[in-house]
Amino acid sequence: MKRAFIAAGLVGGLVLACSGGEEPNQPPPAPVGGNTSQAGGGSGGATATAGSGGGGMAGGGTAGTGGAVGGTAGTGGSACAMDCAASGQVCEMASATCICPPFNPDHCPAAALCTDFVEDHDHCGNCETACAATSACNTGMCTPEPTDVHDTGTTDCERLNLVLSGTDIYFVNVGAGSVSSVPVAGGAATSLATGLTDAGAFTLDDTNIYVATGMTLSRIPIGGGTAEVVVTETAPIFDVAVQDDVLYYAVGTSVKSVDATADDGTGTVVGTPESSGEPQSVTVDGDNVFWGAVVAYNVEADSIATDAVVKLGASQGNLLTGHRALYTDGTHVYWVNGSTVERRVYDGTMAQENQTISIDSEMITAYVINATHVYLAAGGKIEKAALGEDALPLARGQGVVGSMVLDATNVYWSTDDCKIRKTAL
Image (cartoon, rainbow, N blue to C red; front, side, top):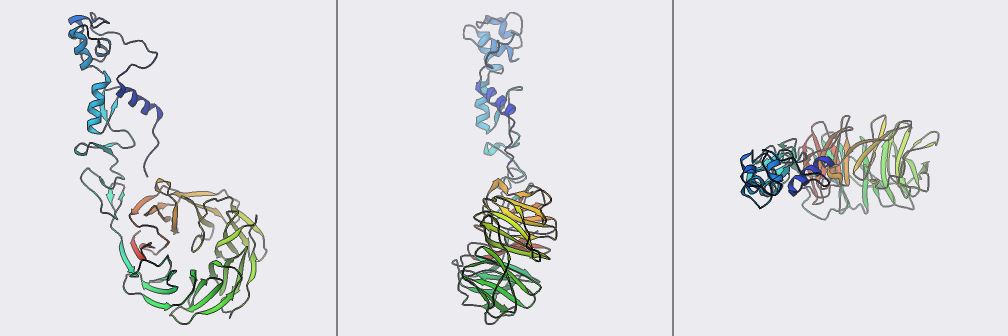
């Protein structure tokens, strides 16, 4: 992440040094060498330590040779500034030398450039190393380029939503209205269902895939087959989760549940957002169901048994919603608000915690977590952060990433050119 915290005093010092003028409201420095004249003063100024700075500035007139020599050789900033500009550096006042600023401490003379070898993709670790187009400079080393797991062969998928199970990635092609699977090692995809109008968010268990298809939830055998309607609603279904053969889904102004084996059944309200919120993401863990609601832009929890709503994240104006927008780890629920990944304990007794901020504070479009890290996509970059730490890049040039999953060795994501890619954790 670019270190943009520049000390005001340091920057001021550098600018003044390059200006060549004396500091305002300060008397001229005392002459050095005894006989130096304020007016430029003859040979005495030239003889007495002409390069000492004081002689240069005090003797900087045109009346005598000593003043001219002193002005050139001392700290008179104009010569320093010209030299620094040519090298891409700045003038440091105290020593009258050209340096690189702290936020770009490394110098590449051939390029006349100050940079940071830790994070510069074109000068990674040294002046000569440029990372490949999809590789990123991470702590001074170029990361491996991502590899393709699957290419759908089209660019009009709208979005690929991903869920990982075992050694397979299951994905909904929103534009095509289809469900398929592909091994994490890569290869040809297996078509599991087609003709799913308005297919979007989905989840799965050991036996079935459950897909939100407009105002219905559809069930498909995990090995593929005909889609069957589980429940029909009068408003679009935005997200769905499953636990113990019960589906929980976000629809209208409620979170509802329905038996996963139902045939066009009826949903039961299990949670109602506060402040007229409209839930558009949902997850469930044990006795609690969680949702992220637009309009109010809150993250809330509800005990399934007691119907007691707890507000966990209030007024999250850039709340990410939809497929896999919420995660839980048994203690905390996680969500994205703009460029940050946040979390809070289920019962709301602890303060909301910022887990990471994307590089350059760019909007996060997808993320996934494990026990120790957050993996996220922002500004076409894939990033990694230890919980509570700054993000570091894993890859770049990935376009708009729509969905992410991970296993013990790799993180996988879908791109807006309808591919599934991966890189090592």
